[in-house]
Length: 334
Image 1 (cartoon, rainbow, N blue to C red):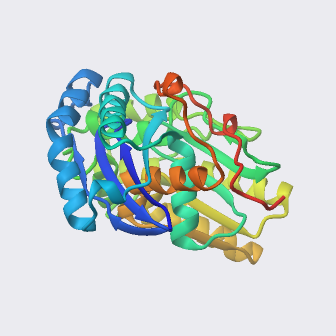
Image 2 (cartoon, one colour):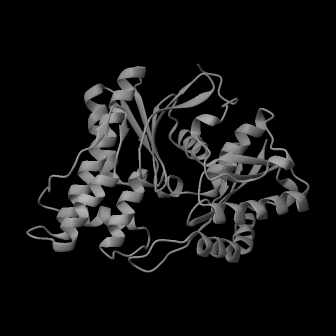
Image 3 (cartoon, one colour):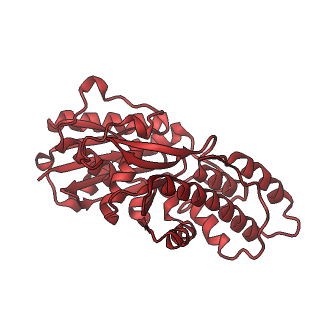
């Protein structure tokens, strides 16, 4: 029976999760929210994490009703992510590891999302659509690796949505993408936008530049129309490339994870495609789609169970840490 604690802080979410054998005991989170029209700077985000992490740790331990001596392993996000926030949380995790005398594991952020979503949904061997503010990847597992079939060639889909929200001066609470989604529900007119799929890869920067021109003048379109059109276009690109990966692999499951995976419209579009193929779509809600500590704790526990530990010399962070760099020793399927 392994009890793991996970520290996540790769972007503007700070989360600490405690997991016992796949059961989430605690998963509190704090979000650094900036004024409308502004993004979050790495240094300011790191300061937010440093100011909140001690109280958040106490909250997690109290919620889980766990004492430090009961924890078997300390896990933290090694990357990818923003440098300053990553380091601020990693330093704290290393300190906790030393104070409590526990082994430590550096976890790939993307792997954390995938393994948590597999745990919560029960998906067995899906095509994974990993969509967030920093990543957009279509992934399939094969021979001890999560293989990347397709990805963005420029900005992530979440970054595209967030930047459009900033242009519109939408609130960053609870998140800019969420507020885009709510406005899109009232859109009536579809504005034709560039649709950029290159084989298995996608491009979102040109779509953003194109729609920004409409946003500054609006012309005959409303803000709701533009939000609706942007969502429909970029989500169609994601569904197309995901379906192509399913056909290549003969897969009958799709798993959506990452912060953008909370979007109900994306889930609906993916479900429609899967229905036509006789396949299933799996997704989680904001508790586990959005960055959280439990996903790092769970992925770390999987690694711990097969003897994977991080040496003290390797407990650094890296902003570039690809999903397919990790050897997935804990999975025994093909």
